[in-house]
Length: 220
Image 1: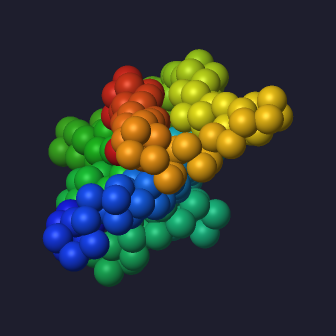
Image 2: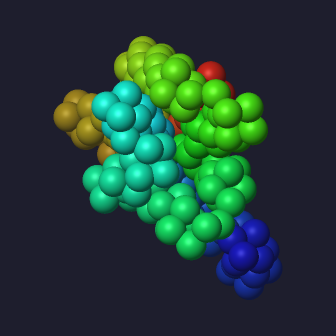
């Protein structure tokens, strides 16, 4: 859609109008993409934390002597991530299949480990407590590693975002020394070309920084 608007603007109003549209569309699209990515990352982090907490609580209930099925139903009241499993157990459905399907959702991959432990324990008749303890411990360690990685990458991401807005600071400095940078950047051919190049490169830099920070944790 954006490309079509640019083509129409170029054909109807000329390259200058297309350049003005680029100066608006590219920053807005970049900000929207970064905000959407941040929301997805936050939702994934919350889901990972809840899965680890839910597994730990189920393991604690089983250690206390409660049946595994009853423990899942009890913990589901505090951890909604187990609500589907509790509903499946209530009607006699296959909870392992429920967890396997739910594990495909962002941040819920830990439920696959829980499903495997549950399946092995049910098949072999082994005690559920030790298996759940191991799963809960592994998920908690994974969550801690994820938190550490995000903390280490936060400064790099902040630096990248700061670099993207530095041109605006440069414009302010230009006015402070008596110049008229906006007139040059928007009303001359050379200045407009520089503006388009700067906006495009700054947006690419911001998106590239996000991609580099996202890769270690596969957050999106």
